[in-house]
Image (cartoon, rainbow, N blue to C red):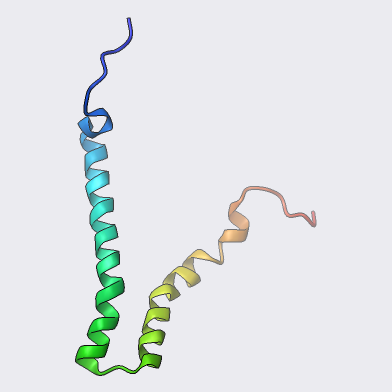
Length: 82
């Protein structure tokens, strides 16, 4: 006999709901930061276009420093040269 299906699916699982709410809050925060940070820089600090551009680039800097260097070795495949 097949298992009875819950009409809520994965939403019936507390762990999944916590993950889902956390990811949603994180995405919302990232979206607000993307808009608000340059806006605050322009309004409160009278930043120029160059400074806002540098600020936007600085937001990506941690990802470039932390994320890109390990990327070539993370595939698990041997190098083509070997």
